[in-house]
Length: 82
Image 1 (spheres, rainbow, N blue to C red):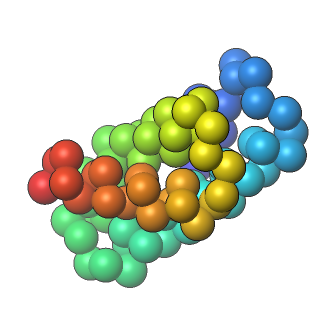
Image 2 (cartoon, rainbow, N blue to C red):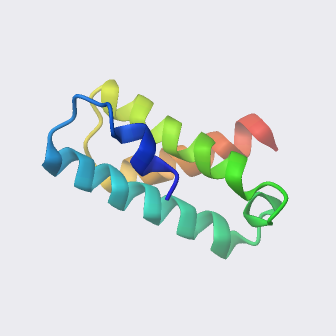
Image 3 (cartoon, rainbow, N blue to C red):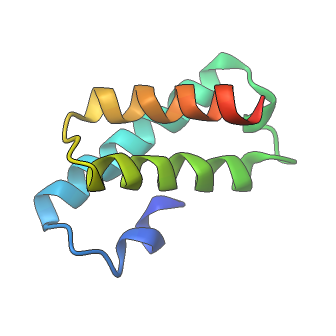
């Protein structure tokens, strides 16, 4: 899972880390279910890292709602890298 190594050195509490992991899993599931090329083996690793980093960035800005974190990450990937 791409987000776990990025959270290893974070200052987030365990409950928030659980929320971020859940948001990441939801976001990645959305990417896969969309049929996006980002889910293909060629782009998967980079796309997963982009999604993970965006979720962490938004959490650092104060967002705590997993649905919003996931939705924002998917939208960010689509608009920034499509």
